Image (cartoon, rainbow, N blue to C red):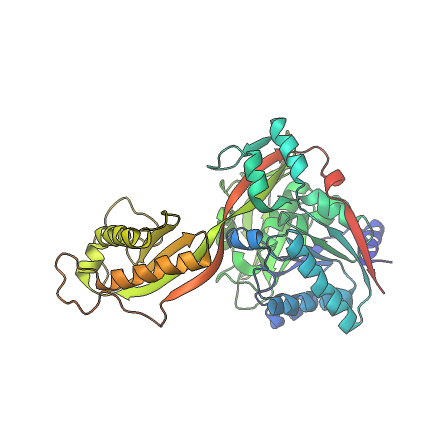
Length: 465
């Protein structure tokens, strides 16, 4: 009997609370072993881990690269895979390889196969890829079933073609279909993180609103605690609510810290929106069980009028080169906007004598306006600031040419009030210019109405003997 089969059989004989272990907030960046082992002693019914996020930007989706190192992903996958097989409980992995497209899923599955062969593990694995067929997406555009999110413009066929990789963020139903294939391990491409921990509760008939709320918290491991961290967390779900406890003794899940986590990744702190509907948190209560544990009750599930999937795509925009330097002259810092504008013009005149202006050059001054473009001026300026120049151009060679020229002329640019001609910048290392590789932008961040995702995203089963 498989791990999911054994769990379903156990609950059929006697209904009880479900114990879910959130091993890591994002697999591949290290799982503290003491906390994981402490969690395994608490008789969990399943282990879940999320690998993905768009927090890391479009580069990994566009380039088809893992966000963590392969060695880091392999180390963490070995921990959770061996732990799940040791206890004979389901392991669920979402957003394989970080961005969840075919290259990321393939790389993750290759690592799992290596671990299974080396460690002599036997299990059944259900896999669901999330790559969105371009012809289906174009048909959706033509039928008016695709709409933009946030400030994105309406999606066009040209942008669909420009995307190097296109994924749909699969929801709970895809995880459930994979589990229903009678497996021990589930691995999905790009997927909603709540599905990792809400799919088994859905199969067992737990209230969906409460399960979704727990899932949204547990997928981040101990981030909901004081102090927040990535240590393993245990969520215990029943028909009225759930309890949270970090497996690291130094972290406490308090009512305030758990409630504050509702602000994480949500446009509205009272709503958790997923493809099939949303969890209404307006009447949720948070109660301390002791100094380290909190009980949560009251979330209600509201079905969606129309099932939608979020689409993500990334398009190549050029090659990136960077200039990294520091500045300590108060006159440079105060006048940096004008200085950057003047140097930009000088560089354009130099590198575009026999070529068009085929690049984009910009600057950020960390310490003043590097994080955001503030509407108001700073009340006081820092003694030092960090300068970052960025060029994106059609080729790596062109980007390097522009950024190196920029370095030279920003270093010696004469500005009003300058006292010395010896140099305007301090370099933390040489060369201060770096080639950062290909650059991408999110060009697809849209919703598509979809009645039957199962037809496009089938489950494939692989058996390890």
